[in-house]
Length: 395
Image (tube, rainbow, N blue to C red; front, side, top):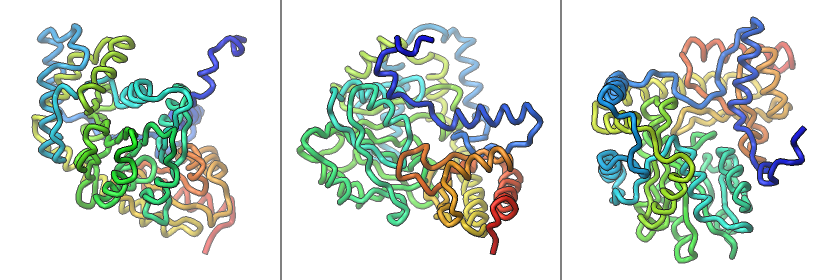
């Protein structure tokens, strides 16, 4: 009815596919079908109790009012200290901005830096919100292939070939959604050499940086000359199972932080006070439950990868971070969307088509193993049965 009256910029925005598939899965469940959820990207664990208690106590103590736009000082200082201890990034608390979730840092960074016609290099396959926000700002998304052959890490020579006079921003994601790939220190050195001295900013999405199975996930901001040009995105949702608390943050040069805070105050004033207190407790309180969660994710990863590799027509690399498997399904002869649709509608297994993450995602599925081992085992059996019975794919 009103389609012709909406602003043209809305045409560039897309729905995040995980929520579209989740909605359809819920419809099927209401109709009586059993569905195993491997589509949504959030830990299935409960927020640790000491964090919950801190947030509840904050509400009881009257933390129900506005805070400084960029966040309470204690939390900003704690975030800066945490990054220096964990990753060697000597952040200025004045360059820390606390926001309601991780996505606002994507929005605010792009809106603050990208003019119409500017090019933004984005990983493909990659988190679909990157492309949506770039288009909303009038920028031009330039896909950077992330290939299985390179262990789902970018190739520096591919990046170099895409950089041009209109390149304004590069977006990195490590550990990565949807592939689980993790950039190495050598990768980051090569990336820095590509962008140094060219007035190119880098948005480094490090939201999964504590969910790593081999070593650590280094930060581009530690490379000489890159900290001032790097905007780090991180938050509490994945590490502390706090997706519903809506609290994230950015670490950047204080001059950029001023612009990000200006966008924040004009859009939502500030982040909820009690969630900031809970975030402070997350950083300063016990970390044992996080370590237990990562250990459980490792067990699930190994189960899922081994199980997928045992199914004819599917092969899967072992992800080094995050909680996603990105199996190659090309040998089935089916497109990514065909198989994802059949798995949901006929087998009751909710996954995402690789094409939900870009053109180079064709031939893959994204599977979140943020579910119980019994459910994951049942899902693997359903996938194998569907391919064998419905599509005749068997040894």
